[in-house]
Image 1 (cartoon, rainbow, N blue to C red):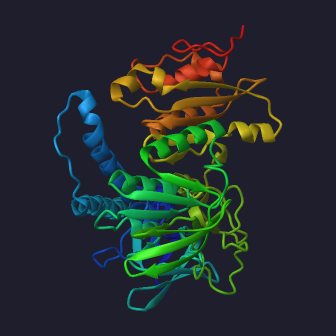
Image 2 (image 1 turned 180 degrees about the horizontal axis):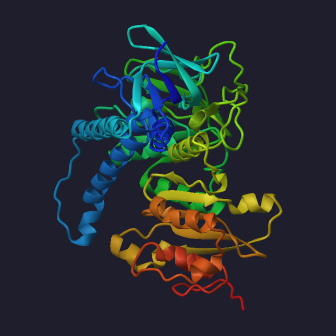
Length: 479
């Protein structure tokens, strides 16, 4: 029998590594098990987010956006950049370097905090034990007073478009293209599909997004979603709604995709096809037969509001449990669980989890949409402000988008904030903090904002809730 730990975490993604570090900081003997093999053949930490998700995709989004700015927007600012070109291989190498630096950083954090890193595949077995199979197939069993399952998720595959190396790929494969495809198909107009489609659209691909649903970004406030769709279409993304993919056929270096829409059966030919139809929890094989941790029919682990499973001392966090599949949600759950294991009182406010789509402009939201509130019978009042009326947005050459605040009509309490615009992902933190402290729209309206900043749009939107916006004409005024 190997060492015994106070806490063993299975998975070193943004939920797992944070849980392990927090547990160690609180004086617990903690270990974290990880099996992810990096490009250099060794085990790396960070999970999907760091290796093939959040971080590498943002590196490509930022590089491709700067390329578009230099190519099309610099001239308006008086900057003569000449003939701007993109070296895709160099862009990819930079992305890989960023990932390598950050994965190594987590290993350093483990050492600094006294977390034991265990390499291999972890499995919960009976008696609160974790069996780890290393890369050579050898197994070691560890005892733990507490176990945290943070196994993450994997992309969903669909029968009509089986993955074909280099031709039909998932989100991971889309981060490895070494040249810009001329015709790119993307299945799914969700967060991942829009971000990856944006990258290659900026670099010159003719991008078509096939979305089975009839509505665009249904989880986003209707007004913001409509504005976002318009902006992305203007940039060149061809987003086809109500397009249900029924099949595909690989023909040499091309793929023919068949789909149905309101006009019947259709087909399109692409040089590359990215399948982005969602993710599923990675829980198969993580829990041994005979261990009574309950899962639902989709593979999610049942947990309570504090991430406890039905088995005492066993917790689950992140993508393998209910709630949005977001790195920051997983991290906060990891902190909460570590605090609880250490004997502290802790909880998480699931009503104030921010969401961001890193297109340009960015789309960010927190809390209810206007349609959510109406569906619950809550009378609301709203205030919006366009970036077209923002001095800083004009100076930044980023006047597209708007900020919107939704407040309870009776109490004025902020129920949601929605932004499409430059730096929306940064500005949404104002809404998160305001809602966390139960702020009213008036609270934000009475706050002094720095001028000139993009954040002033949030201030003006709060003022607009009562018809008191200063830098635009108000649709209605309240006394």
